[in-house]
Image (cartoon, rainbow, N blue to C red; front, top):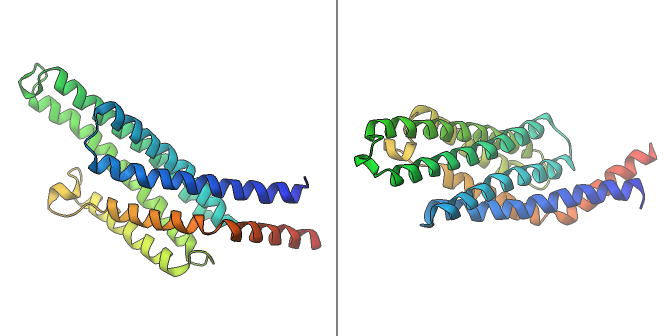
Length: 222
């Protein structure tokens, strides 16, 4: 296999892996919000979401780079990968605190309600940190999409707006989550945007093959 074919194939495989991981992440997210699962399953689904978010972001980076590599997409990938790690950390701390709270008798146990509230605010801080990373990553990905032939201004503008709303709400109501402060959780809007991006990624496999092949052919002809 020639170097040209290997590069084209590797880019396409990255995009394909990213699409399937993006699908897994968009399925895992509503399960975490809506499904009353036992703690071990919640931990497993949270880990799947965080890991798949990182892999999906790498795939999206390669899809955007098949048209034109940008610093925006590179930074977005770094932020989203870090955001996935923070999400797993937040979820594991949250589940560990809840489990210990139940094991020690709840508010009637030895650790006391006030201490529990103090510990709970640790995961609230991680929650906002995760939102900051995913918000900035989403904003930069959406910005990089503005001139991309497979996404364009509709995807770009929608993603930037949702990201700004998410960031503003979480910073404005810190440390209380926006939904608990009388506002609303912008997370589901972000999830719907990523679902649309994932669907468009699946629809872009053929375009990636043609775009990377044409680009490498142009380089050889110079």
